[in-house]
Length: 622
Image 1 (cartoon, helix red, strand yellow):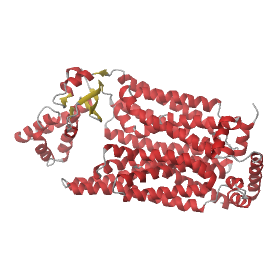
Image 2 (tube, one colour; image 1 turned 30 degrees about the horizontal axis):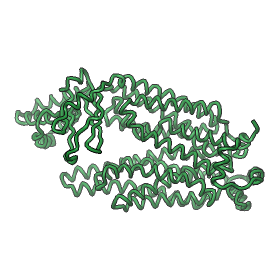
Image 3 (cartoon, one colour; image 1 turned 45 degrees about the vertical axis):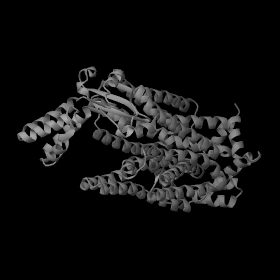
């Protein structure tokens, strides 16, 4: 392998580490949050801010990254992003209160925002045209790998923490210490790829295009010599110089002037609009919400929590596998082909999901008045199976209630066929017990379902812990079924604030078959997203923008991307709560249709073209 090939591989590794960090930014809070909640005194609103801080930091980082990359250079900003990531982990690990934790998460988000702008920009300006697609696609693959890595890191410490918490029994100090160690260890572990990325950034060369723009031709030649054989490097150097010579006939623009040019000159307006539509529609496919709420969606479709988590993990791994397929195809089939294939598949997957959810969501009945009538002494306590308005068969109830300023959702389910089988197995176990033990368990079952006082619960749990494993498992599974039928809403800390029932719907419980079909549709959605938009969005961001406006334009386009994602995330739960998941899926379908039309009819193919050739495509007269 030649020296130039070795260096191209090295650049791919560095960019891969950048994508890994970006994925970790997105994924690490999910497993850490439950233990952060158990080991700190943060309020619910403060925990929400800690989760949201990464997104806010990412938006801030992406806005500033483009202008700073023009001023300081691409390489220094990559070094800064690595330092911010490592520093953020240190701040989070050492934090003992809300403000340091918040600042650490904000800094972590800023590192991700800078990475998302600067690394694709750097790769587009450095890699040869034949390698650019795979190089930027590798960034997306490692982003998905970062999400999976965060999940595995979380699962590792989660398992250790749960064993420690179980062994702690009633020792609250030991439980808090185990939870505190778990979430801090999760964050500390991901410092290592950040340190590797920092070392890699220190060893790469600056972008030759940026160096030529800064009147440093010899350094640009040296950078190109590391990337290309001598003849190809000299040809690339002349092409860049010629393109910049035409550009430099015009006065050099400030970020504000570049923004005005993007909005007024045809050669800049068209690529800028295309990039913004593609970046906005990429989020409007619903990808972030599907990834963040995947277990919730699968449970609402009919799977139990354990099955939903298992299928969700498999689908996230599929995300990475299909990104590898995209890396292989992106230079063979081209960007436009993959975008058409990907968006077309997403449209079909979302339509199937919308039809699937509409089938049972259309049968929901508004029972807010009936549920509100059951509120007594500022409490809500009843068994769903006893409610006359619940109807026949397996049904589920969703209640949005409010105490003062505090809102929360309560859910209850009547037994499905699978749940009935669980109750039957438990009944067989109970019948085989001595009379005294049998009476204790039966009284506990009534308490679990809300039909008796809770005095028998603790003795029953102590008894269950002494039974053989098979009997213990059957009774614990039955306990979950009984608890699921019980609606209990009470908050002593709420003082005199009245309990208000804001929303209540009852409808049929989806079957496991519906859940499996939903998992298949989501797997299709993720596979098509990975093979098309997941990879090509970064290429569109880095390739479409002309040199004169590239860094500023990329910052604005990425801001639109992240702003769209923020709006969708903020609207997701209220929309699905009031109107159903199928409405959200239909909205995403409409946005993806726009994405498909833009890709199929307006986006030029950039496969195998240099950045200067792409720029000339938009410079042609109408």
